Amino acid sequence: MKPKYATLLIVMFAWMADSGDSLLYSYVIGSVAKEWNITPAMAASIGFLPMAAAALGGPLFGYIADRFGRKASLQASVLIVAISSLCVAFAQNPTQMVLARILVGLVLGGVWVAGMTLVSETWDSSSRGKAVAVIQVGFPLGYLYASLCTYFVAPSYGWRGAFAACAIPPIIIALLIRYYVDESPVWLNARFRGTALQRNKDAVPIQELFSPEHAKKVIVASLVAFLGMYGYWAVMTWIPSYLAVVGFNATQIPLWTFYILTGAVVGYLMHGAVGDRFGRRRAFALFFVAVALMAIIFGLVPVYLHETHGSNAAKAAILTIGPLLACSTGYFSGYGAYYNELFPTRIRGSASGFSFNVGRIGTAIGPGITGALAASFGVGGALSTASLAFVLCALLIYLLPETAGKPLEPEMAKVRT
Image 1 (cartoon, helix red, strand yellow):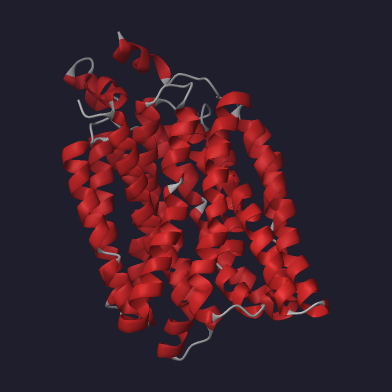
Image 2: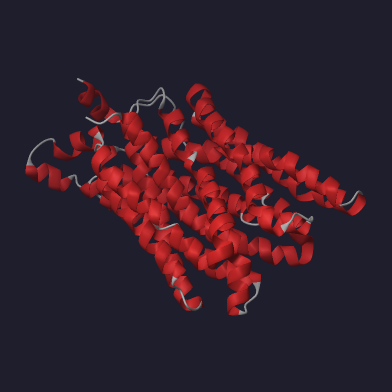
């Protein structure tokens, strides 16, 4: 048996490679718009609206994870990350870019559901939140990954070269999954117990997601994911543009953006510990309220200082408030543990994948809505409007049951005996 901490790190890097591939586009929107002579808002729509495909990719790879195993689903989705990155690199027109980004969206849902389900079923209830939080650290590492590709590759090879470079790490990670990651013992126990007839019957009853027992949980969890992702991407995607507005040097913006997002590392780990100690719902509510307040402050204070005290004051405010804003987005690290605890093993991948990745529709429309609002309210004012989504999340989370400390069904106990 391979060390489970190796699994933790490999899944974290898989998530880093996947998120970096999707986040890289936010750095090159301007270059894409210039090359194809389209507006930045249109370029943002071309790049991010197809990310709604994650609403299909989550259930699809969740089905694969429930039917063929968490490891198989994770390995397949990571390999497709490399393919999707190359497809973006070689896109010759907006139509091809849309098709390539649809593929990016599909695997963005796939890597998350396969990796989070695998780790959730490998760790026990007392530390599951912290383990999943480590996986989520891969997201800000994805920003570092994208920032470095932009900073070192794009100046010489353009945005296409940056995306081509992003295809290399996923191939290495897929090999690591093949040789250094074990299948989930919970899935193995549930999948192969009983007779062949029972195994076939229990394989993946997709329709159970919408049964009276689970429909409410699926709907509310999907809404919380949708609003949480809408708010996050409505703000974070436009940070590079916001930095440009207040006078940051264009060549340094990727590195300053990464600096701001280092706060997310602290927030992700903090949310995992808070969720394990005080409950999933309380942790989510606390962080949603915090990010709502920080979105307003981050969107309005630097603009006010820029108008009244000049660019340097606005820059100082952004570099102070920005990491605190990123820290408050730590709620992202809670989805993996919480959504996997809400559903039984036989539909865990499908249900958590559907609930979380329907939220990717918010990922798709958030940047576009911010761009549209920015025309009337400025970038800072548009960013602050995302706070409403976070407040709604803080209220909706209490419609779901508390699951902290919950073992993942009798299968976990059987595996241990």
